[in-house]
Length: 185
Image (cartoon, rainbow, N blue to C red):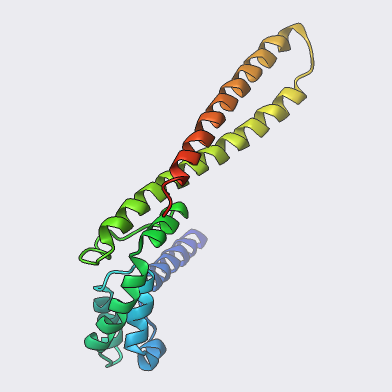
């Protein structure tokens, strides 16, 4: 009996999480919405203009319909500020996701996409540098823990070899990151 209660609890929790993840606006948010401002904020975050369909579905449940003209007016202002080369670089550098179609048709789209890609490349390079730093520290701790003995000499040699390989890789990655950063707008 306890097992079935636990199963029901987890199933109910999963359903709540699933439902809350799909809701774009709460009923109180729908009632108080400034559709131009909501469109502007969505555009500024790089959301697709089709996000209004989610609001229409959620707010329709409480009898409220969004104003598509006001939403689009706000979204047009926000998306122009999002789809800049500088923001493309910043979004990529932070490793943020980007909805490919959000900037489609916008004046800055080709440059935004280009700088987003190179920013994302720089982000990946930095993540690899961080991962290598972590591994270097781990290996250094391990090297310090190995007690000198004939048997341990081989392990110490292997660890030093791994540390040299990581050091070489770090040099290469830092050079690559420096090159990538030169492309920043």
